[in-house]
Image 1: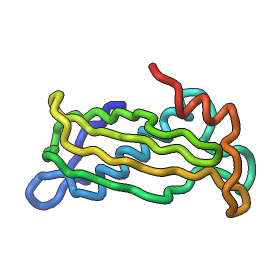
Image 2: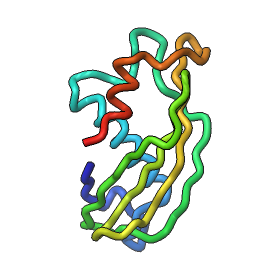
Image 3: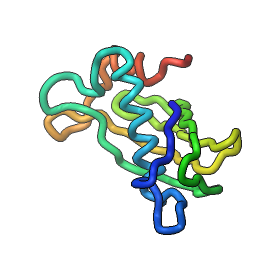
Length: 124
């Protein structure tokens, strides 16, 4: 997924504010579902929640840049999935994170529904 960097994304120096990299990754994960006319939920009171994030800031993006978010499945379990998400600017990796997502229903871990698992693990 490609994202343009706007003024609202940057700090006073025109550099992307660090928390926005995590937001961009969230958008890319959501977009996987939106492109298929669905959401990352399976009915009421269910969906993916973040259990852990390990983030590495490797470079910077600036006002006006176009960045690309890439998502790769690392570990797939019954009720959780670990993804590696990378952000590239001008073909150079500037951010990467490993994120552990757990599927919950009514606040408790549950098996990831097959249709949602197929979407999040689909390779383009």
